[in-house]
Length: 427
Image 1 (cartoon, rainbow, N blue to C red):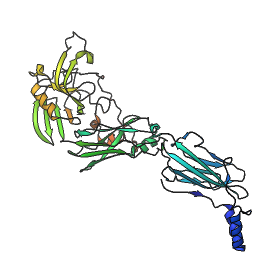
Image 2 (spheres, one colour):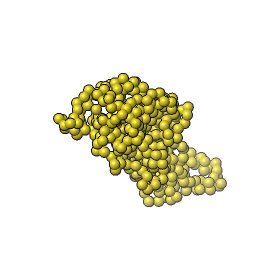
Image 3 (cartoon, rainbow, N blue to C red):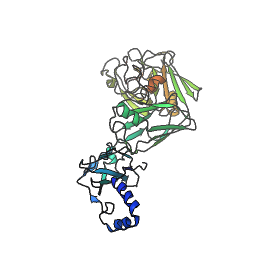
């Protein structure tokens, strides 16, 4: 905060200048002796005349400006000084008639303030009012929690920001978003935030993150409030690193998966994907987790026990790409179809050896791209990280800092989305 004191020139200063011209020494002595000169009188307590609109007992809301006013009885405010516990001044503005003052600078959450108000009455007698108050705790302000946890990820990993309070107003969103700062080094990556909902933002670059980069995420919202009145507090920054650029491209038409490391083809693996009615989702997905063992049951996707499609199988080396249960995993029972036919219930199956190799060579945040299939397109946000299925123009429309363009912002679901599945969906 910068120092700015709001002041009117007291009427008594004009009278004093005249007296000094006539008899400077005598007036000076009289002033020291308190002989009737308004300047010499001790300031009267102006409590009855001065009102504080925000800080009248208890804790003040830092999202609201501090307001000071004086009664319309001939009195006026001549000076207001507001400082926090660290001695930093709060900017403010005094009305031309001297009846009102309000802060124009930001109050911090969880801070202690002292406000000193100087006044004068209709006769020029000085008054003073001092008030101290605290603003509501930082815990009551807007917090942001960044994700994922610190660590090393694939180049497709989006950054997430979870707010503890909803932010609906677009101006407030823009104010919040402008404080969420993402940078990467040694290579910079152009990126943008996307408001998934009132409390959730995702950040991704225009293209994938650079390989072997350091990504720093921080908030500068602490101590301020947005245009929509949301008070911000300081939150813990996040540092991530990226590994190699790993891309697993599953071609449903050829039943093969091409594994690329930094653009170079490392392996091509025969696979099987979803059969008709259980088509594997098309589009870009991001590895969410790795599970060395999963018990997959058909009831979890609505297939009744005892039907021709039912199953209850132990599955190994499972790499998850949707929350509803789509994996790339070992499927030794379908090895005869891998590379030639699609016979699964939606997952990508491969031999145990290949699934183990794949499991060992991917990490959270790596890219899995399913092409040339008949399944619905992977949705952007409601079933994992489908963020990359929005083109850059669509993605930018999710930012509150970009002027909206009608019909370009994607919703979490698409019209052709298949019914949500709640657990492992393929064997």
